[in-house]
Structure formats: C-alpha cells, structure tokens
Length: 186
Image: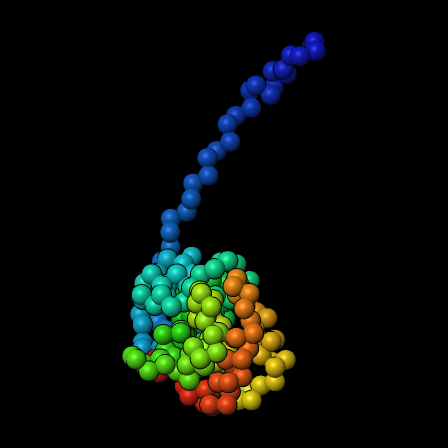
C-alpha cells in the first residue's frame, strides 16, 4: 500500500450504534415544606431547588452556581443547612424542608431579616436567602456566636457584592434578639 492511501479495513468499519436517551423516570414524593405536607410526582433527575421553585412556586430559593459552591440555594433539610441544587427532589421524600419563605409571615420580618435590613446585609439580595437560612441555623445552635463562628458559617456562601461586613454585623445583631429561638413560621 502506498503512502497517502487508506487501508480498506478502516473504510469498512460499521457505524457506531446510536445511543438513545432512556425515558425520563418519575417518582411520587411526599415531604413537608414549610410545615405543609406536599405530595408530587417529579422527574427523578429534578433537583430539590428546581422542585421548590418550579413545582411549589417557592422562588425565594435562588440558584447561583448550580454546583454547590455559592450557597444561594441553601435550605434547611430536617433543620440542617443543605445545598438544594445538589439534592434531587426525590431525596427529600419523608423529610422536612424549610425555605426562606418560612422566616417571615406576611408583613412581619423575622428578627434575622430585620437585622439584615438594619445593618445593610442585603446588598443586591441574590445570595441573601441562602445566607439567612445558614445564619438561622447558626443562631439556633449557637445563640451567641463568636465573630469567628459567623465568618465560618458565611464561608459557605459567595456574595458577589463582596460586602460581608454588613452581613456579619447583621448576624451578630440578630443574635442579641434571640433570632435563633424564633422558629420559622412555615
């Protein structure tokens, strides 16, 4: 065979079989969201964040990076802060989910939200719901946290406005009001 010619065996290679996507599977989940029982049929690949926003209309939970780094999607799962973009909705089955909507009732802000308003911890507000949920869990578990504990908690959140000082001051101010003792309303 001369230079520049193609071997006949290569030309005879059969085409690769086309991979077909498997059908979308669904599951029925039952969970409690903000003290309300919820039962829904969801795509098993749908994230908890998308389920909360799209299926339940709880748009207070924001999606930032969608790979668990920024913390904007933080909610409480059985009282523990979790990244809802990293969980599937089906993983919430049988559990209790608390979102930022549970902090206030109508016109009355939760003491933590009020502290964020007073100390300019809101910035643009995109990351605020996730930070509020982590801060609530911190204050519930440590009613009088040190600045180091507040900073450690905030370490799991990226504020693109880069204004953490107001957020730290807000969490510390809320600690003096017993904000962690005031449960979310649901």
